[in-house]
Image (cartoon, rainbow, N blue to C red; front, side, top):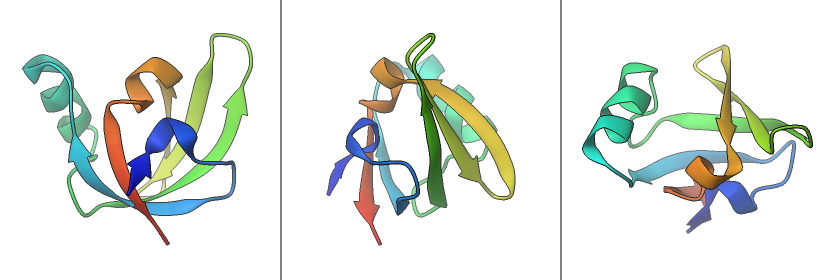
Length: 75
């Protein structure tokens, strides 16, 4: 298992655990990031230190600092 922030663009993984404050966890779960959810890292954006993800057919962007709070299992 690894942190989402450590994944390279094009990598696929399944979400194992969402860390952080309760409001943060709830917001991500409302967006569809639940344990067991498959996801793909699309790209890293240098401006704003963002990570673009594909989750359930939708594209989401997270700050890399927030992505460190997500534990994934690489495929």
